[in-house]
Image 1 (cartoon, rainbow, N blue to C red):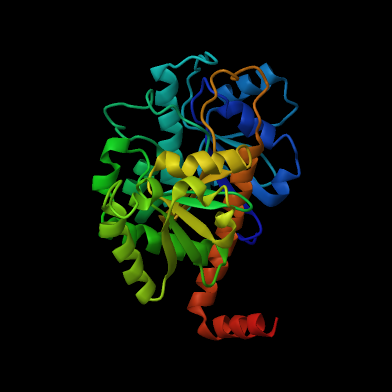
Image 2: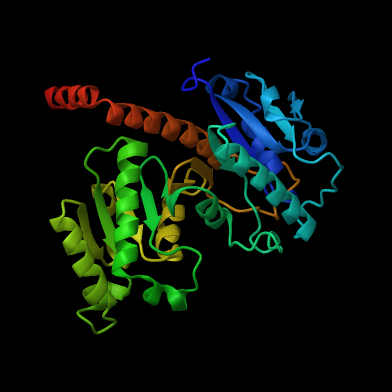
Length: 353
């Protein structure tokens, strides 16, 4: 079977007491999803059967004990563990976090070994995943250690892409962390991501300022004038279409974001507040800059909705579709890059259009 047509999507189950199990199964209730991909859920048949029964979903599960047993046109469940696990919906329990990490680690290993093509992660709780063998703020930091490349949180939707210079960092540490080297690395990551993963030949990128009004000529801070502007100017001279820094408070309200292929925010909330305001429930968290593809929904464990059958699975479904599309786009990019004549033909065709 052509790998580009039938992509194997690995799925880590996330926090067992959250909405992960529900949104995963809801996504594949529509059997047409199996025309687009072959899902492999990293958990256990016992656990997924519990979710199936609890939510009364008419869905068939295909249990496997190793990845050589993956069957297309079926919802595969790899038994990462065999024992039964008690699910306490809506409760923050370290046991639930421990199993979430077992699932995630097994899925990452499969991704590294090319047993799956892409990884989609259900939400975890950043506190109860902490353990002696897992001291990371979340998925992204672990993936950055395990995979080649420089990871970057990149929030994507149909009309908006937002990257972050710093992500899970206290606000008091943001300014000191933003250096010319960091800005350069992140912008190069976004530029390459837009080219290879989204098919944008000449990306145009905007960067938001660190301080209110980008410092007002040093009155509210000097970082934008002393660090950000000179770095962007140098990158521009080298041929990168990057602009800013822009005042963050008015950037999205004036719809200036529509003029760019991606926006880079200085810190977590500066980028994610507008992104989730404009795209919540439709957005996807993509880990850009790595050799492998990982996406996740744009929300958390939603303990308040867990077990009630009320969880919206739209973002998780979008995460699956995004992973598939990015995989295909990257494969095409790599093929064209390896074949300069084919690449030239595409450019000629683009000009004729």
